[in-house]
Image 1 (cartoon, one colour):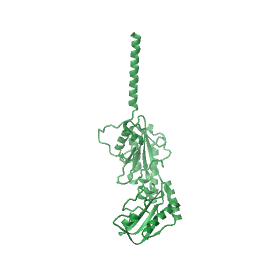
Image 2 (cartoon, helix red, strand yellow; image 1 turned 90 degrees about the vertical axis):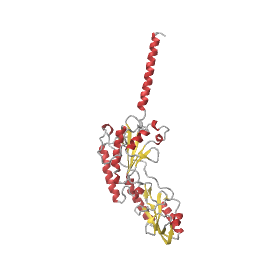
Image 3 (cartoon, helix red, strand yellow; image 1 turned 30 degrees about the vertical axis):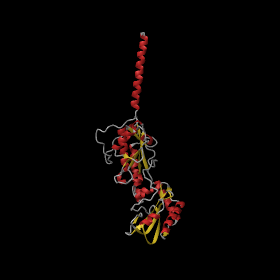
Length: 359
């Protein structure tokens, strides 16, 4: 082998080594960030009263164009198709069309349970029958009790719309069938009046509904699902019932979560989640579902800022527009007015009535 051939071979080897090294460096550089072993105890959940951290000027340049009614998945768990035995009454004349059922003699809880309709739905609306027990308290029928009267109700409005004439007629049929089992007499309100009331309530709810959300986007390197879960857990989030979903629990057990964090479901179900690349995640707040005392919006804002700082991300609206500090403050001011309006209608955010109406 002459010197020229040897030189070309050496040069080729150097070039090949460089290509391999660059490829390996690029793979490492573009690989999603992965969760790291915890060297210190996880941080406690964000305190809504703490001082707000500063903003990255590069990440907050354009104002938020649309503040309310972002189309995020609600965190409500729909009412089941089967009757659930629960002593606590659910009906409320504020949001239900009500019918009274008078009886000639008391009825046992066992008989009432056997006579209940198969589902607690009328069309798309929730429906319930309650009994007046011997302690003069209304409750869902249960074994071991006796009832001197019943009342039935169908929800006037929900996020699916207002109660209509067909649904009201179905309500009448179900209640009458139940009353006939015991020879009871059912007294119904006027359909026309209830349908008008349903439309008015639906109009109010539609104009005072708010589902807020921020989108966090990776600035440079993508995130693995484990990386997202680790950082979210440090802010108090726990795994939700659906893959790709985490929730910030309410302080009162059994209440809807304060916030939800959502990312790609397929990435969460990947065979190798640490290699799945996520470039964005959504933080959502269903305003009417969460009690005002939980300070849900300040917590949404603080969590978004904290995650953006720790994960090297930016905060945008759902259309990808950067959100300014002034825009965040403006949202908070508008929400205070919304809370006041809901309370003035006895539909305070987080109340049983509001959770049903905005469902």
